[in-house]
Amino acid sequence: MDNKKPNTLLDLAILQLLRNETATIQALEEIPRDLFVPLFCASFKGVHKNIVKAMVKVWPFTCLHIGTFTVRKPHRKLLTAMLEGLQFLPVQNSGSRIPKLRILDLREDSGCKIVCPKICTKSPGCLFSCAHSEHSILKIQSWKSIASSEPEIQPSSLPMELIVNISIVSSITLRQHEYLTLLLNKVEESSGSLHLCCRDLEIDELGDRRNILDYLDLKCLVSLSVFQGSLVDVNNLLAQVGQLRRFCLSRITCRSLNGKAFRNFVSHLRCMDHLNELNFHSFVLTDHLETALRVLPTSLDFLHLTFCELSYNDFKFLAECPQANHLKLLNITHNPMDWEDYEPFYNILHRISGTLQHLAVNQCVLTDSMVAGVIPALSRCSQLRVLNFFSNPVSMPMLMRLLEHLTPLMELKYVIYPIPVHCYGRWPIQDSLDQQKLANVQARLKQMLREAGRSDMIWFTFPG
Ligand SMILES: [Zn+2]
Ligand SMILES: [Zn+2]
Image (tube, rainbow, N blue to C red; front, side, top):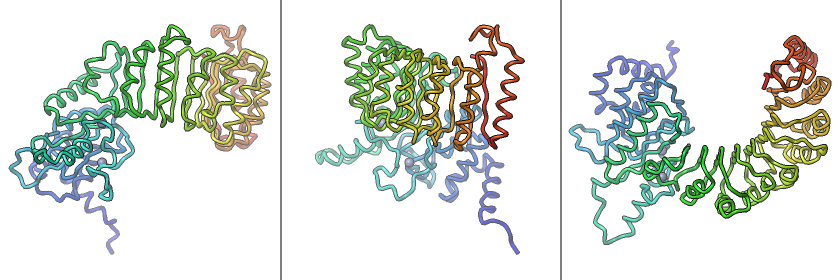
């Protein structure tokens, strides 16, 4: 009896094709359309650069996405090869197969299939085609159909889209720089028929990046991260942006939170109706968190406010604002809560106890009395998976008490705890750390987890 699975023959065929690279490239005109996706996947995984490049040239579907592949170092040259293989339609092709590719999606791990299913009724037949830019296939096609006096679309001007994520930061490698240059060259080469559709942009030194930004339509962005810059420059960028789902600002300077630049900034925030993740790092907002947050939608899942110098009043607002109603992640690292009243922090945790999965409160000067005050709220966080509160002045008895209250939280798997103060000659001076005392703490907590039947829960720490 034949026990072979139905796909074994397919696997063998693909293997054979990969072994004979030159013959396979010559045969691409002839091989069945159904073999394209499995052959592309196998070629990508096996880093068969020449086959991947040749396949892009004769791709028989409207779209091609990297899909769920994560691009590791050896795969990077594949992205370059795919770009090189991209031809502007229609191409002079002596073969029998007419290339159909109009949307090439080079985003890593975008979570979509290599080719969109046929059921997609959205023009041009791709679930991820651009819906925002004036240069998108969708918009150009609709203009052409509206303008009845326009002649038929000339084959030489068939629009195409290249969907990418771009990082323009000082630390990019030479290879990333070359990739970026190739992207821009492709746009130049297309004479206006290729829309470079950037969905996720990371950028620093805004003032020096103008020439690259000129190639992008910022309306296409879903995610924007700006590292280092003035709020005035950020505002200039936001004036061109459409609907972001993720917005990150890091090391942003603002002369005065009562000035015009901050008011303009807030008016841009007010337009972010679909925002899901907000990440402010090293952006001083003392006593102005309410002004920034209250204009945002209540759909936030992820909120990072690290090194923002938040005040007692900011925490009180955070405890009441509808924008923080159902957070999955709250990161308020390095905002010292050096006040006696634990209520604001308690109220924050109490309100999001049904949804919170990840809490980070490192370096917040959390004392024993603050931890004791919030334990009742923390122990209700039934969805909590990660608790990170290293570098806080907490005692060993308080750590043990906390552990007892957290072990019933079955979703909680990782706790990064502070080294208790008695381990230091002088907290938190690293040179005064007693390694033997720390080893005793680790052993004691491990034993408690074992006794509570929670060996699956990992408690670890590090000086910091
Ligand atoms: Zn698609
Ligand atoms: Zn676009």
